[in-house]
Length: 179
Image (cartoon, rainbow, N blue to C red; front, side, top):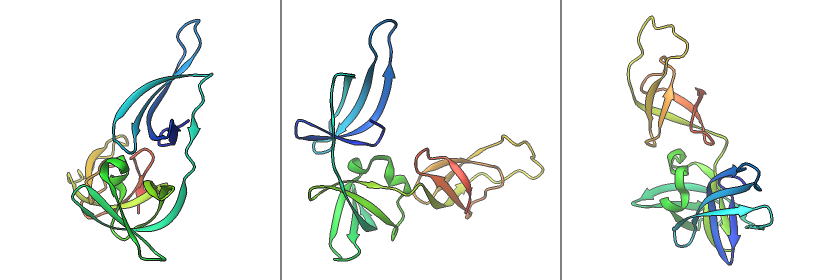
C-alpha cells in the first residue's frame, strides 16, 4: 500500500491518505492507515496487521482535458467523444492545486464512476505573488514563499519574481526549477 492508492473493502472504495508502519517493542508490527471513503467522503482510521488482506481497486484510465472549475466541481472532457464529466474537489484532494485549464491528464475510473486523476510528475505554474528578491543576497539556503496561479504556495529561491514560470513536483509540492 502507498499514499494515494485506491483500495476496496466490502464493496466500498477508499483512497489512502496517510500510512505509518509501527513496530511496538517486542510485539508484531502493523500499519496504521487513514483513508477517505470515495462515495460518502467519510474519513476513517484503521490498523492493519500482516494477516489482513486488502484488495487494490482496478482502475481504468482515460485521457481527458481539464476544462474549468464551477464552485466545488471540476469539469473534464473526453478528447475523443467530447463527453464531459465532473469530479468534486473532495474527490480530487490536493490535486486541485496543480490543475490548469486545457491541461491534458489521465482520469481514473472505477467502472463508469470517475474517482480521481493521475497527475504528471511535475507541472509548470506561473508565480502570481512573491516578495521581491534582495540584490546582493548570496546565501544559498534562503527561500521565500511564492503564490502560484492555482493558489498553491511554494517555497522558492530569492531570484524568482512575480510573473516567472516555475516547475513544481506534484508528489511533494516543492519547487524544482525555473521553466
